[in-house]
Amino acid sequence: MASKNLKNKNVLITCGPTQVPIDDVRVISNQSTGQLGHFIAQRLQKAGAKVTLLEGAVRNPIKMKSIRVIGFTFYKELLNCIQRELKKKYDIMIHAAAVSDYQLKKTYPKKLSSGLAELNLQLVPTIKIIDRIKKWAPNIFLVGFKLEDGINRQSAEQITHRLFKQSRCDLVVVNTITGNTYHGFILNRRYKILAEANSRPSMSARLMRILEDNL
Image (cartoon, rainbow, N blue to C red; front, side, top):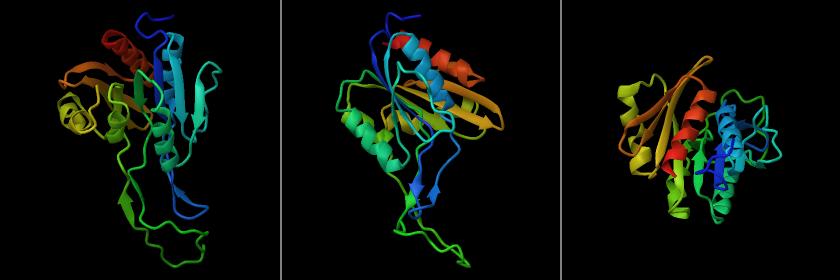
C-alpha cells in the first residue's frame, strides 16, 4: 500500500557482498546474502517510492521489474556507482551493503601459482564509503548499517557512535547474526533506540515505519 510520506521519494539502496581482488582470478569477499536490502527495497517500492538498488554478487538476485537494479562485484565498482548515482537527486540512501574493510596493498596482475609453499598478503584499509555520502549529497537522509557480534541495548550507542559523528548518518541499524538468528536495533542521532527486531522482514518493516515518520 502506498505511503503518503514515501510516495515518489527517490531511494538509493546498496546490498550484498563486495569483493577485492587478489590476482586476476582470486578475490577476498564476505558472506552477505543481501536479503535485508531486498526486503527494504521491496517494502519501499510497494509504499510508492522510486527505488534504485545497487546489488552485489548475491546468490539470489532480486526479481522485481519495478525496482531499478545496478549490479556490482568489486569494492571500486560500488564506490564508483554510488558517486555516479548521487549526482542525481535522491531523497534517501540506505547503505546496507557489506563493504570490504580491507584490500590488498599490492594486487597481483596475473594468477598466482597454486604451488607456492607460503603466501603472505598485506592488507590495508579501504576508504570508508559511508563517510563520503554526505559530502556528495549533503541533504540526503542517510541510513547506515553496522554488523557486530554480541550487541545489546547497552552497547548499541557505543557501536553506532562513529557512524553518527563521522559519517553523519540520520539513522543507524546495528545488527548481529549468529547462525540463523538475526537481531538488530534502529537508533536515531540522539542514540535513542527507536525499534528492535528479531528477523530481517520485521527489521525492514520497522525501518519503513520510521522513515515514514521522519520524512
